[in-house]
Structure formats: structure tokens, C-alpha cells
Image 1 (cartoon, each protein chain N blue to C red):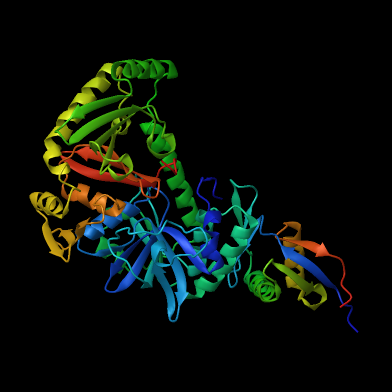
Image 2: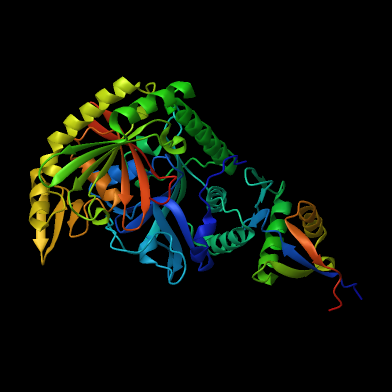
Length: 419
Length: 98
């Protein structure tokens, strides 16, 4: 029925499930004090929805993960950070992660989302039993302990499942339309599963499309040339204090975003311990343009273009993290409102969406970084990694640059869990 | 006096997921392939639901339960046996004298 496997497994999340909590891969949008949970796999349109919701001034809970649990009057949702598991492996490490919004909210609607290219947008009711089955099918727990705990947990929850819907192509909807829709059409589990399978095969085709068809020989030769030219890294002194480093990596990230070279662009402060030093990591990935892999000479051109773009941005970027004043100036220069109170500063868009915090690093949260990119869409980098050096994790976002606008394609944890 | 057929079984969580209150069972052939066991008729659906809910009540944390097949309806017994063949649950003990 579900022919896909994933390296992700619910088994690492057993501490939650054992406590009758269900961690899910979902985006949660808060609307009229109710939480609308949209469950879906990678590239199903969740992040696009989150960004749309933020742009419309709605609140979004956490990032890609949520935890469902039963409360006094039904089903509630929160972020993993707000339901920390003591002495056991947490879903994500605790810390001062900035969330767009945090807290515990009563679930007002449960949605299952898939994106299928070429199909019309559609929203249909499904039974809560079918929703439970779909949740189990995508949870991909593989051990008997995991399956037992998952069964017990969902068994407790499902009487509280309300407003369960199945959404095809969520990115084609207005967010309010999606949340407030009360579909008459009912979709059967069979049809849902067929859609999920179609989505998965579409995802595979997409992955194949972005994988350049180039013989391994040429790829290897090209990479050697780059290594010879740049010795793996190119450093550029921006000022007495700041340097810009391009690192050229032949890392394959086929699973997430195709295959190709990554050019890592790092802004660093000189003479500072590296662990405390790296404010932003940008990766430029030519493959995302769906063109053939660039030749070595073309890659050189790309590097130079990237350098030019980066140079233009440096006056802004170098002011990011030095101190509160620089933080304020930086965000004000981008047109955001900045409020400082008691040494803590928040930068907000006109809609009140928080796009930066000080002293918490502005780039310490993926959702915020997305927002930042959307609002300040001047940096023409097709893709970035978000690296949380404190906790040694990476996440990956794929962006498409079109007509001077940056469109978020996808967000996914990097296959390399640690840096 | 009715013959006691109390036997010990264990839900086979390696292969199956069952939910209390849902008359459907997800089975995994392997890590890649899942399929769904669904009742074909309303009577089967009701019988499967009763069976699942009862097993949920009597199973311990490991999914081990004692059940007396002689106390099931004919349809429940048929379903129970069929699901035993599918290895949704497996027998872990011989007839118990309890």
C-alpha cells in the first residue's frame, strides 16, 4: 500500500509515544484561537502554507514538528520544545530556539496534505478512522515497540479527532479558504492512499528531474579542476574584521535536492573562535536550476557572480550579530520595525511577524530565516543550509529564484544529522 | 458445561498495527510494503470491532492476552482464526488450565 521507506523512523521518538504523545511531521496554523494541523511528508506543501499564513498575519506554531496529546477537553498540540522529555532523548534539543509562536493550543482541525503536480486542488472530508490509518502509514515506525506504542497512542486520540480533511495541492489554496472550508465531498481511504502513492511517485520524478544526467567521469574531472584552482576554499577579505570564505564541496545530497556541487559561502569574523563565530551559512547549488551540472569554468563564473552578490550584501550581513545596536540597524535597514526592551530586541514586519531576535541569533531558527528570506528577497541564492552549531544539526531549504523573487520549494532535515 | 479453550496469544506488533475502535488493521509485509485488512460486510465490521476492542481491554503492555475462543460468536471466531493465519496475533502458550 505504501511502498516508500524513509530514514526517519518514529522509533527515536518513543519517549514521546510512550507518554501518549504523538510527534508528527506537521505545520500548525493558529486561526481564531484554534490550531489547524496539516500533516504531510517532505515537499507536500507544508512550509509553503506556513509562509503564506505568516504573510497573512496568522500565527504558525513551531516549525516542521508538532506534538499531539490529550488534554482535559480533547486534543491539543504544541511544539516538542514545550513538552520536553526529561532524561530521555528529546525530539529536538531544548534551548533558546525562537519560534514564531509557542504554547499549547486546542486542535480545531486535522488535515492530511499531499501535492500532486497536474491535479486540481481539492479538499475532502475523511473519517477520523481513516485519518488515524494515514497517520500510522506515514509514521513508518519499524520496531515492534514503536508500533505498539503508536497503536496505543492513536487509539487514545482518535475519538477526539475532529474536522479531519484530506487536501490535494494545499499550496493552491488561500490559507483561510483551506482552514474554513467545510467540504461536502467525502474521500475514501482507498482514494487517499492512491493520492499518497501518486504524490510519492511524483516526488520521485521531481527528484530525478533535478538530478543532472552527466557521466560520473566528467563530474569527477570537473571537481578535480576546481580543487586545483581553489584548493577547496577561496577566502575574501571583506574588511579588517570580516572575511568571506567560499568552500567547494562535492557533497551528494541526492535524496533531498538532487546531485551536484555545493558552494558554501561563509561569513566569518576573524580571530574569533569558530564555534561562536559563524552567523550565516549559504550554500549555492547550481543543480537546483534543473540545468545540467555546470562545467568547471561555468562554476567559476557562478562563484564570481555569487561573490558579487555577497559583496553587495555584506554591509548588511556583517552588522548582524555584533551587538544590539548593529542588530537594530541591520533590520531597520531592511525596513523592519525594531523594538528593544531591557536588552532584548525584536524585529517585526509591518504585519507584526517577528523576523529577528536579539540576543538570540537571528539565524538560529529556520522559520525565522525563511521569513527573513521572503521579506528581504534580495539575496539571490538558490538554496541555503541552516546550521545550528550549538546543537550540531543541519536543516536544508531549497529556494528557487524567479523574477527577483525567492520561492521556497522545500524544507527538509539534512541527511547529515551532525555537522 | 462448555469446554474451556483459554489460550495465550500476543499481538504481533512486528507486523501489525491495530487501533481500538477502528475495524481496520495495517499489516507490513516488510519495511517497504504495508497493506490493509478491511472487513467486507457490515457484520464482519461489527465483529472485528468487538474483537479488537476486547483484545485491547485484556492485552497487557506487551500485547499478550488470554482469550477463550469458545466464548466468541461464530463470525468473531472465524475472523480471529483468519487474523491468526495472517499473523496479526500469534499463539504464545498452550491451553491454560485456568
